Image (cartoon, rainbow, N blue to C red; front, side):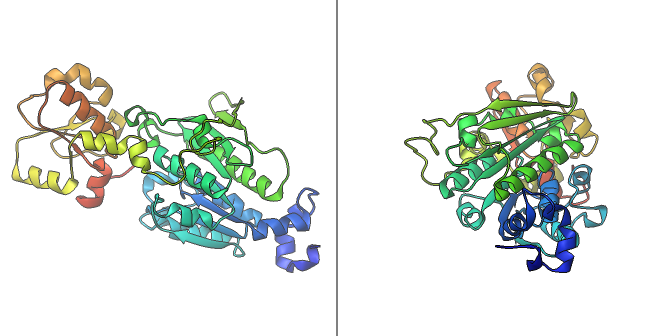
Length: 380
């Protein structure tokens, strides 16, 4: 039986508000200290979640992220500050979390979570908090969590809205029970294209942290079987009931997914790339330097164009492209580009269907260009 005498004076003071809660107390604080929580992504959702889990005294926090801090992150990714721009997010996060609570152990995974490493990484933790921002990673985290028997605290944000649930709990549904099939990549704008109010990930990430703490303590009613919907404009919460699907391919009665798959292909990214033709930033740069005849079409939105653009490009937002095909010359090669290379693949498909024979999409978009060709280009 643990009590407050098992703790140092500094810890008793630090966690004093927890010790006074009947639902936590010294025994609950011990459970928090012994817990291991993995956070996928040190961005908008992972930032508030990591801060609150560290402050709560979760003993070991794992972070998976391979990105560097960019100035555009700071509007919502509160783990990082201006002085951290250009640094790896894991290094910035480690400094902030250690300053917040030096008792917490941080395990860094500076990799992209994939089918090759997910089972090993997730398997070392008690619970996963998914702060990713793309469908392939969400399905990957879900499937690995179900196969390993680990609860998965899901969160997602867009513009002024967000949603949270707890998947993979005993007898509860998983992410595939809610979203059996991913949407087509071309119809899913990301936060860079669609925007997000910086406060919204703070709300959703904090709720994810709360769900993780409740699960560790074994108190309250978990969000298993419930999807919590948040509307920041109306300041309203709604709730949808989710049932475990007996035909679910990963958690159903007769699962057909017993190992991890190619999630990029499952979500359509690889299919789009394979059906079209992509060029790399280096190859495009060489073409532009040689003065090769080509039409460089930027299919982003005007507010993105105002931040950065490629030399010689013409702005034709993706939604306007079908109506503006007459502005392009089918006899001159076309290269489409966007922010990260998803919308430009959809533009490629539109042009190919319209009879344009020489069309390529810039892999990685302006993000890839800034990374591989022009590091001075503004990023967002």
